[in-house]
Image 1 (cartoon, helix red, strand yellow):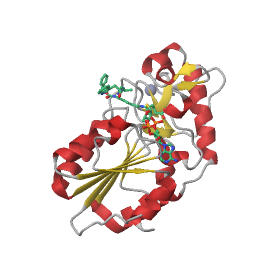
Image 2: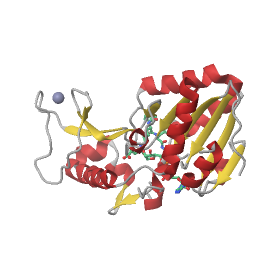
Image 3: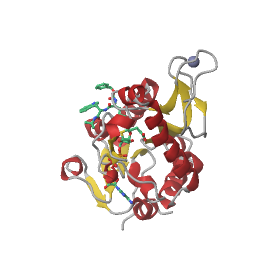
Image 4: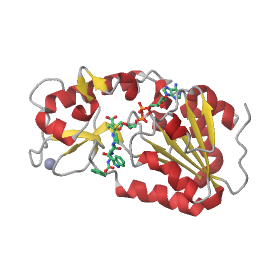
Length: 241
Ligand code: BJW
Ligand code: ZN
């Protein structure tokens, strides 16, 4: 496979999704048929779901904390951390993954736009803190200051992403203009606003790449280049690591 040719002015924006972590053994969302233990993902990853059954939601995230703690970054993560080293501020990574694997592989110019699995926050105080604990049995965790419910620091369905993250992505796209190279890797393109980044990239004249094991025709049609295959193989080859 050809290596990605980047000239001295190129700026690279990468959007990653569950397919990148799949190579480390983390199950994807739609791979679970949108279901977890018979519950719709929208019901265990939404504010209404948390209000209805906090213990069920904490069980879902506790099991995921346990699973994520056992896996390691794969060559796809390492290739992205390596590219960041080479490009410095001409690189930005926006990940939808909450598992922390990008940070563990050395990525720093990175925005965890859907939150962080190993952080929690009080529903009322809203200040995230590091939290690797699991909560399976009642009582569910409460804030020491205000007794509000402690919840995972995750962007659930119907919740807004951190506006500062979206501003940084928009600013990067605007500054890059036609020098922008946008890559979406291992993401189905079903969830917005992340799924709209390709359109914003094309609007400024950027070049767009989709790297995915099984892309939908609908999402693929919005890219200039589509590479079908495993992210852990394609990314190192593409960046020449
Ligand atoms: C491989 C591979 C390998 C496998 N190698 N590839 C505009 C239009 C329509 C709807 C909306 C819209 N704007 C907003 C919405 C509503 C909603 C939304 O998008 N709904 C859609 C389902 C229609 N969005 C929101 O609610 C967002 N909030 C928002 O916009 O606020 C403003 C607002 C508020 C209220 C109303 C309207 C607007 C928030 C979205 C937050 C998403 N959160 C989740 C769950 C929490 C995280 C967690 O628990 O971990 O984040 S949803 C879930 O999907 C998770 C993921 O980050 C996200 C994306 O999934 P991803 O990564 O793409 O995974 P998969 O499984 O879908 O795909 C995996 C891909 O990998 C596949 O393509 C495979 O082929 C591939 N693959 N193995 C390479 N080895
Ligand atoms: Zn509180």
